[in-house]
Each structure stands twice: as C-alpha cells, then as structure tokens.
Length: 328
Image (cartoon, rainbow, N blue to C red; front, side):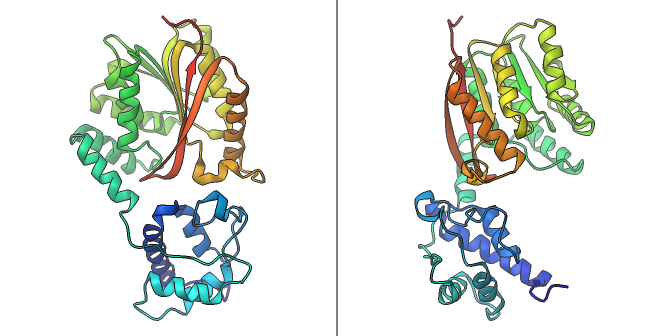
C-alpha cells in the first residue's frame, strides 16, 4: 500500500473540506470535480491546469502544489475546517505556485439552483418517479437537470415543434420534457444505443403518459441515422444532441441534414469543466467537442452560439444552432 495513501476517514473529511472550500470561492468559478481530483490523487491529474479555480486568466498556466495540499490535509488537527486548511496549504506551497485566497462565504450554486427550481417550477410526481426509476435501474446520473429540462420544453414550444429528434435517450427524462411540449399531433424520435437504457426509457414513457408521442429507435445512432434518412421523413423542427461526445460533429451534420430551415439544434455538454480548451487533451470526448466547434465555426448552413452553465451538474454548457435558409 502507498505510504502516502489516505484512509477512508481522511478521504471523507477531505471531500467535506473540498465542498466547503468550493462554496467559499464560488464567486470566481469552481471546478468541483477537479477539486476532488486534486485532493484525492497522490499524483497530479492528467490535465495539470484543471484547477480548483476556473478563471482562465489567472490559473490556466498554473497548477496547485499537490504535495503541499496532501501535507496540509494530513497535518490538520481534528475539527479544523477550510480556513485552517487554506492557511496550512499557503504556508507550505511551492513559491512558484499560486496561493489560495478564500473569499467571504457566499451563496452556493446548489442553493441558487434550488431557489430557481422553486421559483419557476411546480412539483412533478411523474418526473420524480422517472428519475427514481433511472436510479433504481443503475443508470448513470447524467440526465439534464430540471431547469435544463424545462428550458428544452420552452424551446420546443417556442419553435412550435411537431417533429423533434433526440440523439441519446438514456432513461427518457429529457425526452419526456420535450414530448410534453410538442405541438398537437407531434412526435419525438429518440435514438438510444444501450438496450437496458432503452427498456427503462420505454417504461418511463408509459409512466409519464407520453408513449404515444415517442418513437424510440434502438441501436448506435450513426447506424440509425442513415436508416432514418432513408425513410425520407418530414424534416425535424428541433434536434437535441446528448450522446457520446466523440461523435458530436457527425451528429450535428445529421441534425442539419434532417432539419428544416429555421430549425433549432441544441448540443449539450460542450464545456466539460473547461477541458474543451485543453489543446493537450487526448480524451475522446474533449476531442469530439473540439471537432464540433471546428464544424460550427466553418459551417455556413447554421448560425450558432454557445453558453456556459454552472449548477447542480457542475460547470458545463451547451451550443445553440439555427439552420439557415428560408423559414416556413
């Protein structure tokens, strides 16, 4: 066993400190996952600039002094909190690395998200049951958040969509949000590669009362999309891409081909805790998102922008595209 390895008790304590630390420095943008990686790993992470603080101008060129972090944590007395941890780190850190300045306690992103949910949404037992069913089936917890789900619903309503294409179903949570917003007689075609996920989603569609509006196609999307195109379907009004990120550029191409002029295309998870700008990354998902933006930059068939988000699912974002051409 590594002599420097932390005990389970130390790891639990470390995570609590990381959470508290992240809340305190939230005003400059905290990468929670990176914070935990830095604290949990004895070796620096693969991306040394994936630091706790996501301010590119200040931190991109630097990484925290990992040995000093570990030493500061291990030497903390029982009951010591974040302030003591930060002071201990700053006293030990390599002079070539940045110190940590803790800001006054402010509201957390999670607290703000809860406030926004309470302010803009009504309780929805059916959607709660869907998330519970997904969890019970062991599906990964990568659904859109409730606020993001409602945003999809609003966008589908805004374009009066009767035809929606979703690439990446998972357990159907986002599908249900969009299916509920379809114009009268509308249909959502959703593509899922994983049979287990598809089975859970089908049950969820029945549970939520939208099964009659959903056409779930099972199989890898890059195999399903050509078959869908061969059916010469009515063009789609709205496309939501939330599948494997490595294929994002290809999914966007199919979305453009299958959509009408004026249709909206949303691509989720395009910031990835800031790793989208890591030119040294060899991660397939990072590379896929970068290819997506290369395509967006060059493709004159669409007009696009992208937004960063921070909330219950961390630091991420989405791209918004509109297919150019004469609108109906």
